[in-house]
Each structure stands twice: as structure tokens, then as C-alpha cells.
Image (cartoon, rainbow, N blue to C red; front, side):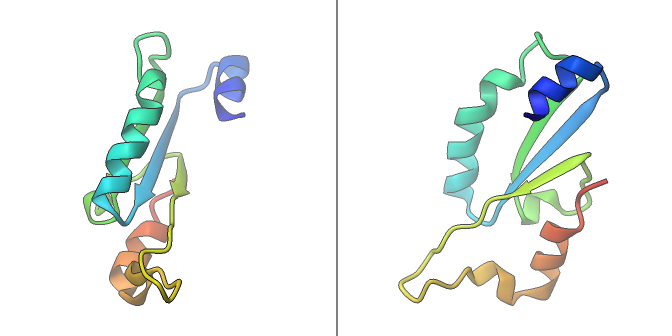
Length: 91
């Protein structure tokens, strides 16, 4: 949907994908790599961990959360500073 809107409007758009887990960051980067090509110079993805996004800002932010333990809790949300970084990166 976002790529289609970019192609229709021609406006520059930057998308940040945040994950609390480095292994998931790696997997997501593999999946979206094809969109960071020369074909779409004003359409960019940045995939980083929550800690890696500190100080960053993008037009659109997608937060990927997964359960990391048997109790079904997403551990990084228990740290307010990390949760704040994840939730405040959209422009």
C-alpha cells in the first residue's frame, strides 16, 4: 500500500521498521532489501533494533513485536526508555 501511494504521488517517503531483537532485524532486512534499490530513490527503508533507532526519525514507523518467552510477554516494553524510543520515532 505504501509503495503504491509513493508511486502515485511521487513524494519522498522514509519508512523505519523497529524490532527489539537483532535476529528479527536481520530477517526483516533480508525481506525488504529489494525495495531499497535504485529503482525507488525517494522510497527508503531503515530496519534497526530499538536501541539502534535512538535519535532516528522516519516518516512512517512500523514496530515489529514478537513474544520472546513462554509467558507471552514482550520484555522490551518493561523498559520505559526503550518503549519510548520505539513509540516516538515517526515524523
